[in-house]
Length: 505
Ligand code: ADP
Ligand code: MG
Image 1 (cartoon, helix red, strand yellow):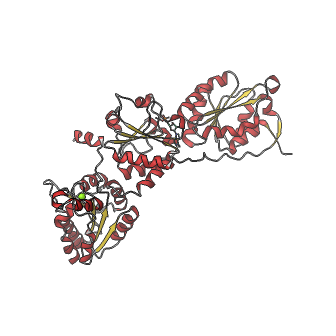
Image 2 (spheres, protein in one colour):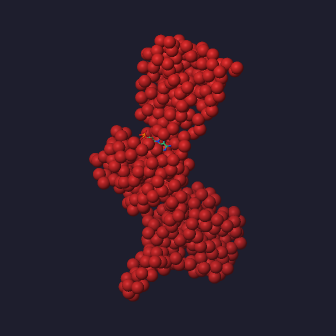
Image 3 (cartoon, helix red, strand yellow):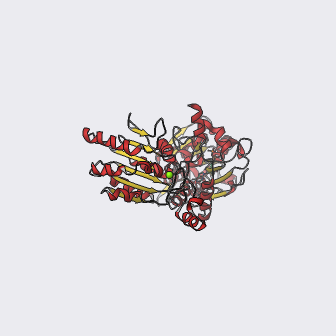
C-alpha cells in the first residue's frame, strides 16, 4: 500500500490543483502541512498575521487564476484570516484557506473527502474564498495515497445570442457610448479581445482602478482623464466585469445620466440589476461574450473604425499617407499613425477637397526618382475622390504604384443604401427627393481604375479588405484602387475625448 500522511496528501492534492503558493502562520497541528507543501514543490511564505497571509493568497489567485493557499491554525488563526476571506469574496478573487482544527475525537467528524472540491468552488462561477477544515489527528495519520486530478479551468459560458444582437443594436443607436472595464475583465484575461473590440468599434473606454492596464492607460480611446464627464455624458454603457457599487457611484444620477442604458456583462447572474436595471444583461464570460459581439459586428456592413483599424495594422510605418474627405480624414487622422515627418498630406489649411490624387502623384513621382522604397497610400472619402478621380489615368500612364483606398459611404458626410435609393426613385424625381449629400450608392470607383489598366478591387468585408490591401502593397508595377463599401449611415461616434482634446488645444 502506498501510504502517505494526511499532511502529504493535502500538499500533493494542492500541487495537483496547480496551487503553487502557500501563505500562512504555522502552529499545531498544521506545521507538518507547511513542510509537506514545501516538499511537494509549493512555495511557502511564512507571514506575521493570518490576515496579511490571506490577502497575499487571494492576490495570487487574482494574478495567476489558480487560488493561493492560506494556512492557519484553528480559533484565532482562522478568525484573523476571516478579514482576508471577506476581502477576497468582495473582490471575487479565489483563495483556499486551510485551517487546522482539533482532533476528530474532540469534535464532529470533518468531511476530509470534500477537499478537492475546494479549489473548484473557489474558481468556478464567481471566484471567491473557500475554507477547508482539517482535523488535527488527520495531519499525521497514515492514509492510502489517492490521486487528485487537477480541476480544469472553469467552464466558459456564452451569453444568449438574441441578447447579444440586442446589445449591438442598442450600441449602434448610441450617440455617446462608453465601455467600462473592470477587474473582472482583468481576472478573466480578456485583454486581447477587448482591445480588438475597442479598436474595431472606436468606442471610448474607462477602466476602474484595477481594470487599469487591461488596455494601456495611454491608449487613444482611454477617457480616464475625463472620468466624471465620460460617466455623466454616456447614453449607453457597456459594462465589462465591474459592479455598479460605490466605486462607480452605484450607476446613479447625478454622476450618471439618469437615462443611461447599461449593457451589463458578468458571469454572476445575481449581479444583474444591482442598483440599475440593465437594458441588456449578458450573462457569460467576458472574453467569450466580447468574441460573440465581435463576430456579430463582422457580419454587419463595415464602419470607419473597423476599416481604419485594419488599414493601420497593415500599412508600413514609413509610408506616405495622403488623406482627404470629411469623416474619412477626421477619423483616419486619429487612427492612422504617422511615424516620420513630412509623411502626411491632407486637405490642409484651406480644407480643400480634391487635392489628394495630385498630392499622391507628386509623392509617388519623388519616390520613383529617389527610389526610397516608401509606399504612397491615398485614403479618400468617396466624395473627395470624385473631385479629381480622373487622375487615376495619370497614375496608370506613368505606372505610379499608388494605393488608393476609397472609403465609400455613398455620400458627402453620409449617404443612403441602394434599397433606399430605389425607394426614393419610386417616390418622385430624384432631384426633388434625394438628399443633397447622397452620391450614387455602391458606385464602382474600382472600375474607373481598371479602365486604365490599374488594379481595381471591391471589398465589403474585413477579410476582403485585408487581402486587397496586402495584394496592392505587394505590387510595385501599377496603381491600385480599393473601393471599400461601408455602412452608409456609419458616422463618427461622439467621444468625450474629442471635447476634452479640443479644449486642451
Ligand atoms: P471593479 O472593482 O473593477 O469595478 P468588481 O469587482 O466590482 O470590479 O466587479 C468584477 C465583476 O467581474 C464581478 O461582478 C465578477 O462576477 C465579474 N467577473 C469576474 N470574472 C469574470 C469573467 N471571467 N467573466 C465575466 N465576469 C467576470
Ligand atoms: Mg463619403
